[in-house]
Length: 393
Image (cartoon, rainbow, N blue to C red; front, side):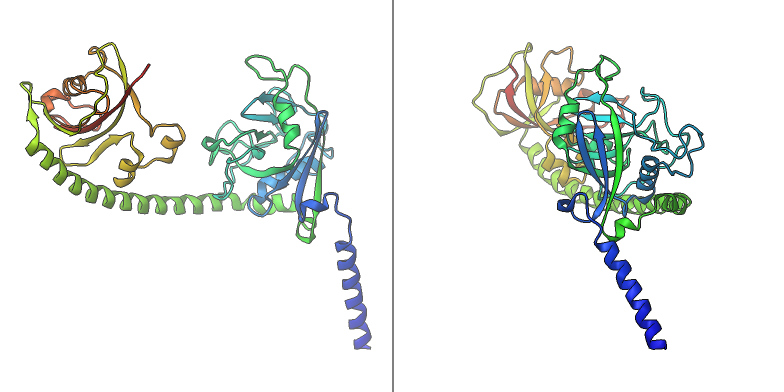
């Protein structure tokens, strides 16, 4: 009897698994996953949702799309697919398209807000990234946007929770619609006709958005604190390593610079100059703007700043954001004497021609004197390496 009961149980389980696995996938070529099918009057886009990495955000989006979000209280919205019939109210070509606002102007939401859910592996690093719109930390609601190109400055400011796997051409066509100046609202409405949630594979079919929301919401603060502590420790370690690199590099460069000083010529003003490489280019005038590579140092050899990536890396001061913004390239400097505050820099650059690379030792009276400036203390001598790349035409 026990044998027959066991056999019956096994048969039922096998039947259940078979029935589950035999469900026809809507997008079989996409494989397993949780997908959002965004049907618009311009065509259909399909996003794969990162429900394992950002469960709370995905749960909120899915529950809104399916009309069963536990936090929706408005009787007109409760029990109805939230996004159907809304518009992409903000379209910025070469940036992103934004929708999900019931007011249609960027001011609305679902009647609740929740915190950010950042994952280090999810970045705004390509076209088609699906991310939450917000007005600041912990203000997520129903609005979302889809990028048209990499937007790394949005990382850790907006929660990435998916990416387009179909319909990038549709996204592009939406991005190119005519919009109102200022508001970037399309002149002809781009309507979200439906957002359908597609579950493919056993794990995705088990994803219960309302239950996941209620489970993950209380854990969000714990996760935030844990990530903050992890980030703090990581920052401390990075600062320790950077300090060690800076001290090592400063010691090495100070030895080199002292050698340069011993070979330098001193002008009447007290400026010390040593030519590292003599160029054969044109000598600019005070009416010109030149492109310069530079590195500036305190008197103990520590780096004040540089637009040369390798130099900042050597001193542990490399900054990824600076590179993204094009900082590590020759810097334009006007040779107009009224625009160069430091007398030593003015004199040193004024003696250079294109192709020259020089070392300057600038006494404090030719720099910032008794007052100092920012991180530069009073009566601080400074050291520079300047390379004149070209005259800007």
